Length: 177
Image 1 (tube, helix red, strand yellow):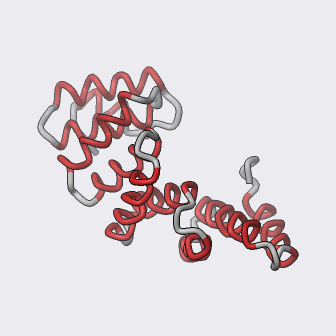
Image 2 (cartoon, one colour):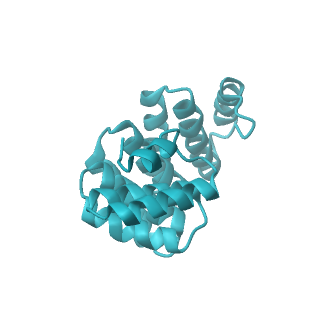
C-alpha cells in the first residue's frame, strides 16, 4: 500500500482479513487500509464500504474518519455524511492541523465558506503544508478576500507538496477554478 501497488496490496489485505477473523483490531485496520487502496484505484463503492466496516468496529478511528470524509468531499458525494464524520474527527482531535483542514475542506465543498474559513485558518496557522495553505486561499477567495487568497496561494506554491495543478492559474488569474 505504501509503495502505491494497490492491486497486490488489496490481495494481501484480503488474505490477511481471512486469517485474522478472530482479531477485531486487525480486522478494523485491514478494512481501513482496504478503503485507502480501493479509493486509489477509484473503486469508490468498495472503498467506502470498507471504511463503513472499519467505523462499525471503531467509530473514533482517526485515520478512517479523516480519509473517508476527505475522499467523500473530493468526490462531492454524500457531503452531509462527510460533515458528520469530519465534525467527529475535530471534536476528538481539536488541535490537529490535518484534521482541521479536512473538516474545513468538507465544509468548503458544501458551500459553507465562512464556516470553512474558521477551520482552514486555524489549520494554516499550525501547518507548513502547501495543500492546507491552498485550501485556506480558496476559502479566503470565496469569502471575498481576494488579496489574502493570492498571498495564501503564493505561500502554498512556495511550500509545495501535493498542491493542485490549478494553483499557478489561481495565482495568475486571481480566482478559484
